[in-house]
Length: 190
Image 1 (tube, rainbow, N blue to C red):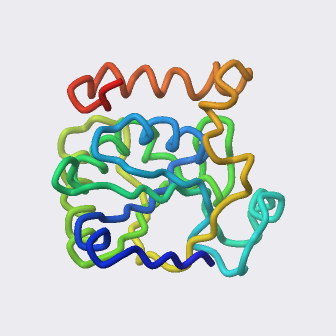
Image 2: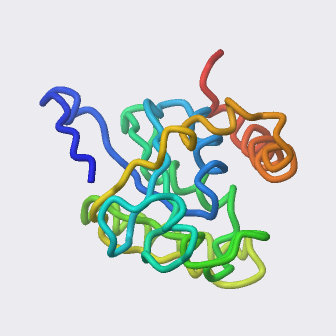
């Protein structure tokens, strides 16, 4: 577990969102471009094994989901907006699956850090269901954030470092393009 204690002023002005929506590389690539996001870390959450490796998580036996921990400035981007992006860039109606990635480690999950985040998650899920954006009901789990384990270094900034790798081109690039098109006004300035 990585416990980083930010300075009191940083802690007061930043929030954390921990989200699982399939492969963490996809979520990381999108949130790195969202205005108001300071940091995105790929990692593991929601499981029973301390300090799991990627190889262990891939077995589906640790209980962990591949997640991103997003540190953001709520004065620039709200938790609700973070979730609106989340429900746009992955399919929250497929249980333990995103495309060809199958297993509990690829589940759709919101690991909330406060009662307010829990309430906002419930509200956004209700809105997405009511809008019938997806062909089925949302199956995203909403559970308290527990331990977060940072993934191995080669998983960090994966899309930025491997843009032309086939998985990135076929799976991640379309998600990033969809995000850029739908949230043009929310992109970081170059």
